[in-house]
Length: 174
Image (cartoon, rainbow, N blue to C red; front, side, top):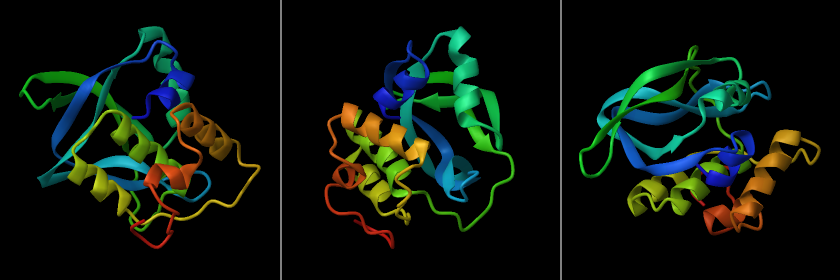
């Protein structure tokens, strides 16, 4: 959801606005190769997953597929709508073997929170994102972590904790 992160992967990426996937919620049930949880969507009749709809060049779809990696199914006919009830059909990635109990790394969740801030998602929704249990990543040589921190810096954040507005607490709300 953070524009500099997506532009680093797909240079043509342009945000089109804030949209919701009604009947879905964000979860972190996609197992990453490092054992952390990555974002996915899960059916939920009582929720809506809010995010940002981006337009990217068709030729760059392969870059996004590669960045998302294995463990996701790309759904090309996914319906979303904005606050004006205008609908759109887009592509999204959903974990194909969801696994409960996974926790995202702090920098990964910070990318999502920073994107929610950048695109001015509802304050309550942003607050809910910040309460997601996560874990601190203390691997300074991790290339994914380094790239995420660079994207956060490009968006004006000092580090992952700065995106949360306070020092990070791996056990819950920050």
